[in-house]
Image 1 (cartoon, rainbow, N blue to C red):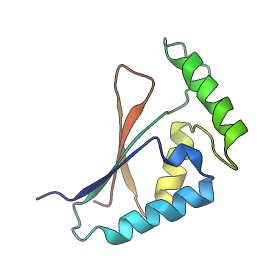
Image 2: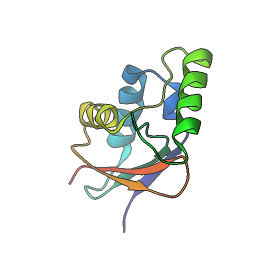
Image 3: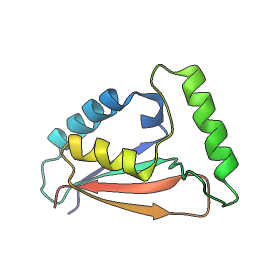
Amino acid sequence: MLEFYVSQSILHNWSDDKCVQILRNCRESITKRNGKVIIVDIIVNPGGDDVFDETRINMDMMMLACFDGGKERTVVEWKRILEEAGFPYYNVIKIPTFVSIIEAYME
């Protein structure tokens, strides 16, 4: 059986360091090697041209204004955070909305 944890629109409230800490705690609580953390959050695509890019940028501005260190992140920024937290593998699933799904796992 697969063990997983889900985070929806939580990590964008926190700085990179806090996100790493939160994800490390999730990784440490996974008891099975095939466990996953599922993150549902915005992924900013600089220079993107899809219908939701303006919404993503507006959300980024709101995170910067409302939270100390909060922001929307690019795929590269997510990769760095996940790797620092101990998740060397990840999969980004784009869905037809302004958020994406990120599966983070260890093997």
